[in-house]
Length: 178
Image (cartoon, rainbow, N blue to C red; front, top):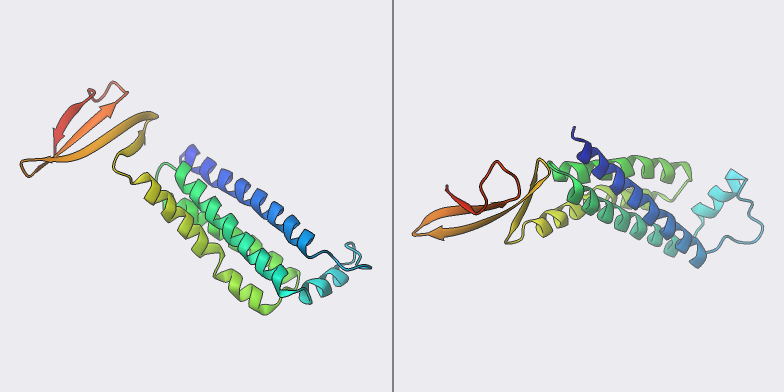
């Protein structure tokens, strides 16, 4: 595995964790704990989570969706190759950790089922968005750390590829026939 691919997943996870922490804080500001609940008592906190308003659970699910989308977008944007694999790896990491958290804190069953439909699909959508952004008219490739811009056009029904390069292997603006 290339080092940059590993860094892509790590950066995506870190950014997603930051989004989740901010979202959880906002969710608990909007729906504060009732008076008399001790955070050090796990049973009291589980009873609060079980009986929490639906709005709190929806905010948390939307927060997970946003975090997986942005994390998948970042991971696949940074990755060199197999970009969708990096986005889905991020979604798998968050699905495992998120399911553990949701089940251990005794969230309602509907939240657990809906979260299955949040983690991987939104990481996939973030990866697809990254691929759509990177597949514009001018293609950018990062090959051995050198920036190349490839233009595709047709000359008399024969496709031509022009590679503008900064490295010494390919001559700049040299046309290659496909």
